[in-house]
Length: 245
Image (tube, rainbow, N blue to C red; front, top):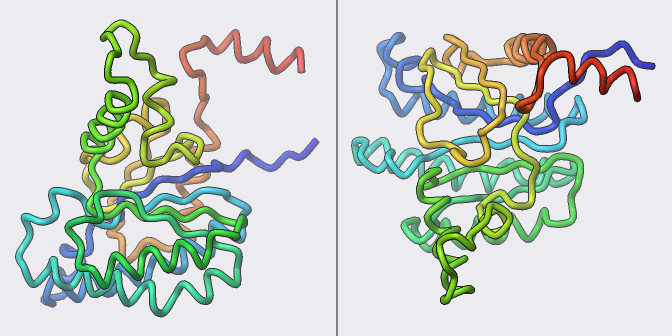
């Protein structure tokens, strides 16, 4: 039996701290976003190299539209550049891209590039990379509820079940995250995957996203390996289950 600690199979990350990274260096916030975008590549590769199946990144929330227009514009441009420059290499490495969120607010060109990138990588299975863009956990639950009601117009409140709602959530194709990472020092989930994070281990680090590298990812894995994932059971029950396997 392998003595290697178990790695999470689905990691969800809020990539926070780009603006503060730039401010510390007396640079525009947009420079921080450019630096942060470069960091995505190394974390995607690190996860693929470790046989982690699912990686979900929070790139742009529904609340981020409140930021200065030039910053929003930079984020949109970075998204386009990412699709242009990175997807060919990622596709050759077996990365499948999906984008979750309300795309209707994005420029038509960006919507078309997202659809093309998803189609071009649809056959890949090494790593399922999900980018949450114009996404919010409350929006996700609401749109799933709306789909349930459209499909079942005569549904009574007491007839609604979790199993009816779950297939309509944005990430119905993926298991729930094992490990959530938020960089930048804040300790909240910020409307990210509210339904899916119900039993996820939450890891917070002061490291700003542009500085978050493979060694920081390994620190998160080491912390995760020490966690006891009970899912409502007791430690004794987990021990008994392990002993009977």
